[in-house]
Image (cartoon, rainbow, N blue to C red; front, side, top):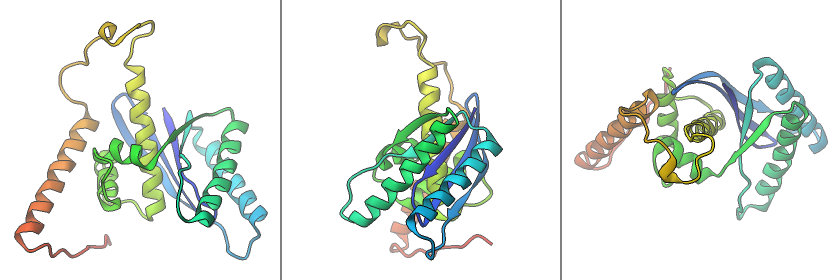
Length: 212
């Protein structure tokens, strides 16, 4: 199953395409759609729609995952996100694609294991889960991949439930062992704990390393 994750925005929109094969997830494509500041809002929205149409026709996703609109103190940002979301939903509907939404907190829980995860922690988890050689950049693309991972993980959980089950007691127990996804998450969380412990021992001094 191919899933297109989108982090909405009018100036910059992040996208991430992943493929789910059983429990395995792999990155297919990711990046950002940028619109020039010299364009009017209608022109920006048109550019986003055309670019999304190209992405959908190129990768033929089964569904689109998009960040759910949430309240923010920055009204201008909220309007921009809402306008971009409208175009995203339209593009998906025009191609008869299923749409899944997720809040930022749900995305953090699905990728990093807790809703208080930092952006850097989410990015490292996205890298680990998808087996990428480096952290995906820019941030908008990493966020879009995280949304796609959240949707893929949620859909897989739903697909485990047998059709016709009336309550949780009627659902079969999960198979023993852990999936490659769960293994990647556990390993990444273990590395994260080691980093935190090292920071505490060294007085919290860290240097950020940029991938070459």
